[in-house]
Structures are given as structure tokens and as C-alpha cells.
Length: 248
Image 1 (cartoon, one colour):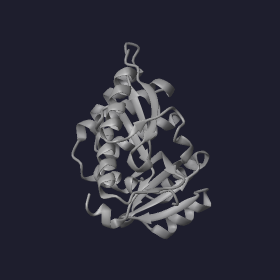
Image 2 (cartoon, one colour):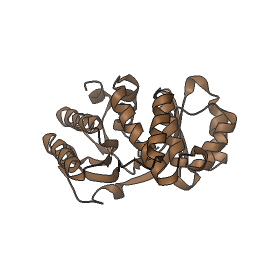
Image 3 (cartoon, one colour):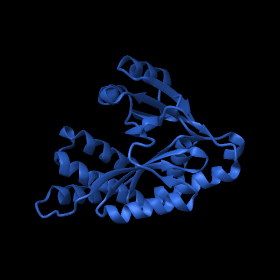
Image 4 (spheres, helix red, strand yellow):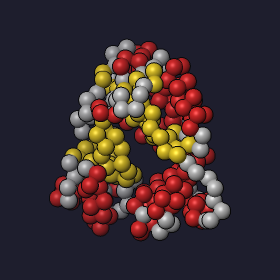
């Protein structure tokens, strides 16, 4: 897809290699609790919860943990409230960065995110300063080892997918938000459950980073953001050559 960037590829590779299950489970747990509090504990009637449960399954989150989280979120005695916020700014080289968070203390989180931007040579901006550079899309991904690529591609396009892309051993299907559930449901009828299915932000254009030190700073910044317990997702539009990627 035209806006796909190196950070997206690096991020997904890291997610497969990293063994930080506690952090992953914490992030998914927040998504489950927010989804339940917003629309109830029935995944069949709560698309957001259904996506969160799929993430939990892919991440091998224990079923008992998931069940307890749903029960806690649905309980009358649950006083935990997470606020969903979006921070935007720039990294070195003019790279645009968006950070989705869930927090019970916005002052703490804002300070932590700002510190990471500053530490890595970037600067946090006002709301909306870079979001216009991205489009929100649905993305459904399958490992190419386990699917009929041609069949899935045909069904996805017939049901409204805007793009299908094979990269790094994965088949990625992109959709408009309004067509996401339709494409996902159609694919579930002819294939096994997707490896991932989520809404994401795709950069309209990429910023090419030609300097190795800038590339290192950007990856460091994104790593620090991803490691923050309040951060749910990060997006950026930086790109660089395979040669620079190989030195990171």
C-alpha cells in the first residue's frame, strides 16, 4: 500500500520476537475493559470487544485472565476508568508520529510521552498537527504459509477491500472503515481466523530518512513509546533503505 512504512514492518517483526508478555497482556486487558464498559460483555454484539479478544487469542493470553477481565469490567463495583487520548508530534528528520494511549492519569501520561519525544530529538505538537497525514484503515493479515492467497485476495476484493499486499511472509488486506466488518466476516467463512484484524492508521506519504543516526533515534523513540504501559498503538511515516534497516 502506498503509505506502508518501514516502521510498520519493524514493529510487527518486533512484536513476534519480543517476549514481553506482561506488557502485551496489560495493553490487551485495557482494551477488553474499555470495550466491555462501552458496549457490554457480549462479543457477538460488541465488535470492539471481539477484536480485543482476537488479539488476546493471538498473543496466547490465558483464557482465565480474559474471563476475569470481562467480569471485572462488567461488574457494578468496577471503578477503574481509562481515558482514551491521542498525542501527536514529530521525530527527527520531520517524521510524523501518532500515539494512542489509554490512561487513568492524563497528566502522568502526557509528561511521559513528552519526555520520550524530547529525549529522542523530537517534539510533541498540538492535536491534529500530523493526523491529517494519515488515513484510518482496517487491516486483516494472514501468514502466507497457511492460506490460499489467490482465493483470499479474490474474496477480499469482491467484498470491498481497497488493497491487498503480500510482504514479509504475510498477506495484508486493507479496507475502508465502513467495509472492515464485511470483509472480515466474508474471509472468516472461507479461511481460518486471521493472524491480526484491527483498525490502523496508514500514512498517505512517507518521509525517507537518509541518515543512519536519525534512523536509530526514530526507532529508539518508537521503542520507548511502545514500552510505555499507557501506550496502546504507535504510528509513523518514516521510511529508509534496506541498507540502513540492516544496520539498526
